[in-house]
Image 1 (cartoon, helix red, strand yellow):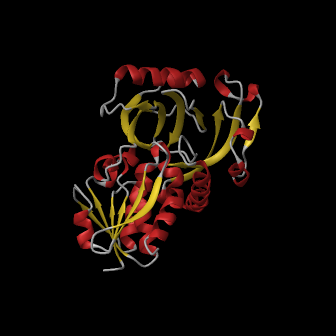
Image 2 (cartoon, one colour):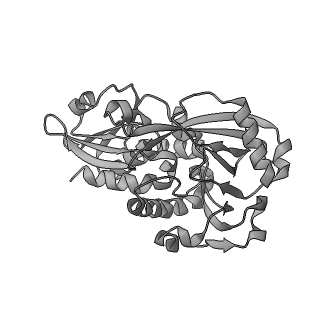
Image 3 (cartoon, one colour):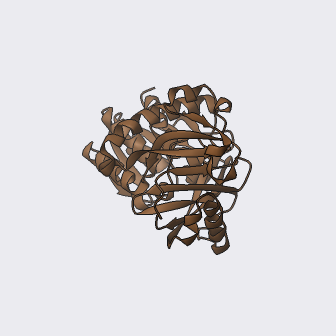
Length: 318
């Protein structure tokens, strides 16, 4: 049973971790309450960028490891859902971001007149933009091809998984709040509006880390994703009409044509944020097994997924 691993959680963190483990020779099963398309990951925007995530030193390494993977996956965008797209981070100064930016090609500080929406400064970049429904389906198919078995089941504790495998990997996101339990976990609600794309080809973000309101839009195939919110402790699962109207209005101040775009739908997701940052750690299980935690990625799970998966997989044989 030493090579058997059960990954609990079937979002982007769980599937990436499962695939990494399988490609290292482990026999892997994924236990997930939800189908891939029903996870929080399916709602994400999703632009590669280390957004509101700690601890900074580890995040830089995880992010860059993941960036290299996405750059390769972008070579088959139709299958993987990963494209390299140009855009602007408003209110962002390159010199404030840290040494990791030296490893990201094409970052360029903009003059005020180059930044749309009247923002005083900004940063131009070409970054991976991931179409999450496509990417999650690719991860699922790639995992199954590598021998991973995906099972729909609700997990109420890790003891059941520990009886079935020598290693259990906790990729439960916000569910870790009750399962571990971890009182440091908290939900940060994100609401999005999907509209017909009026011809916008570049992404845009203006995300004040201290505000519950953000402004961004991401051109994805067949739609333009508008955001957003970062509402601490708000667990409402449904969209709020007033919030949706405010999101459209903020985005339209940057690109006026968005105001008249037909609304296609609304999305809400609860980011699994952890005070103190991402937790990747191992602890013993009864009977000599090992429980590995890999959760608390907030709104940057896609950004760090591959780096975190590799570190978690290292612990499986540690």
